[in-house]
Image 1 (cartoon, rainbow, N blue to C red):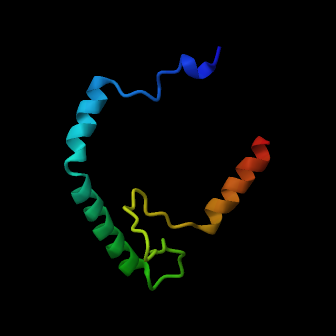
Image 2 (image 1 turned 135 degrees about the vertical axis):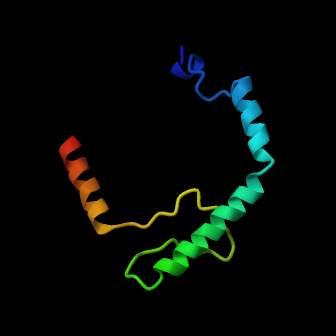
Length: 85
């Protein structure tokens, strides 16, 4: 018996499907708004010494997250990994 045979987590119930069906109607507008906000962030942060998300001419991000990596974050992640393992 597989564990996946008893796991219902990947299935949408009717209520989730109904909500997502409504949200799907405005997906393009919400994606465009996030792209607009990301452009404003990029413009505002461009003069700073940061690694900003890059644009690809063949793909367009919808910026579900606008991630700005920071060296301290990487160090903290490595320290956590060393402590955990």
